[in-house]
Length: 154
Image 1 (cartoon, rainbow, N blue to C red):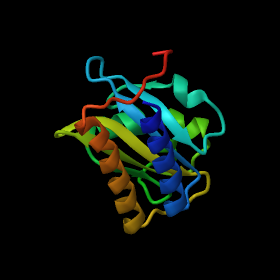
Image 2: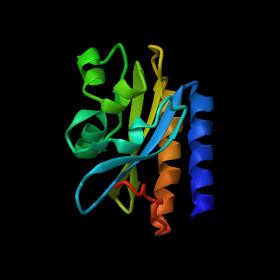
Image 3: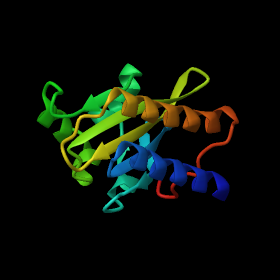
Image 4: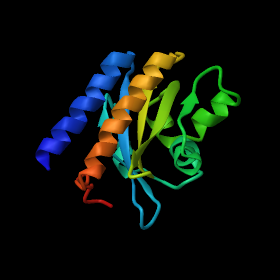
């Protein structure tokens, strides 16, 4: 499991570098309860993400789960400030812009990859596609039937 954790942390670091972002995080969707837990983060300023539990349809992460699609929050998004304020992880990390992508395995959403900036920025199509590529890599962990280690507090 330690090797998987190192790979995940490396990918989170790399996607921040590639997209000139400040923060990236990976959440897991518990299939049984439908709760969303943030398990890994890079560039975090605090550990609050570890204690956040989301629900489908609530906030940015919940919208990604409910709609099954990439969500972008930036200054061009309708209701930008309200979207940002409804996302606990964006508030906790003071993110001004973010892209959240579903992580899929065998056709089911199994998690979320979120990449964000503490400054207002517009992510390019190329950057969004790079984020989606990393999300696909995380989906392969599930495909190999290897689960992410979970926080003991869950």
